Length: 387
Image (cartoon, rainbow, N blue to C red; front, side):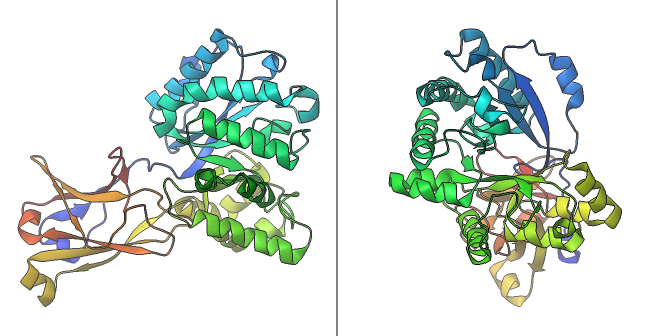
């Protein structure tokens, strides 16, 4: 429990949070429809220290037909399970989990669009628990490579279909910056404000296995493009995340931390690549990276000087030192047994807090008397965020 000398005299401290929402490490939970799901076994696989899961649902058995009611019910059962267990979900719907995207995907784009519309209508009620949908269902492992549907027109058609199917209520993500730039041609600002990135080859090579251009100047510009997108605090924000693979100098220690910060990475696979993850653990960088994925809110200052004394207030300033933004507005609240007291906000934070940015809250001195614990809480669902 964090303490501050100014607050301590009031018997006030910063409370502890077990799991922070919308950031950090994740594990993959793969499913293939139709299949019988053992939810008791699934429950045992959840990690206590991870608030995010990647739910990968293979619908390849339906590549030549519509999803039946059993398949749609199973999707809802899966999502309901994770929602009930308070896990936010990264969703990826795929036709292939063997690295044979061309072989396993549908023969026509209309079939993919039909699946998107069927699934999308069932995702709406889970939208608050879905962090993002990765990809447009196609490619090997759904990674938007090795597919016949990655020409500009197909990307635009499938992304717009998925956007409409989910009513613009869920973040979307593409693999490459070049793929997101294609979407500009749709002239649909809402799609652009929702679409971030997923990169399952972070630091694997100079180009992240083809995520970026071969030309160094273009490659660096694309990385800056990702950072610029992820720093825009508009609506629900655009995120970047994925996997670090292929043990090499690019993902050594501080190189890795700097790269993840540059791309504003919010979430990262805790299972793969084990060679990279083990290296990070041995060199002590694993915990540092885990602590800074997404937002990390630190106490910058507590002021209770003459100016504040005359105003009858205590000012608390926080700073986001994480790799990425805190994408949602929060409130600071003092909790004690008998009541909850909200702080006033001196700095406007209507959409969130970008990396490196600070915000200030203030409490009336008289309301601090009696002690208690202070938490940051997301405004939409009251989930607590560690200070």
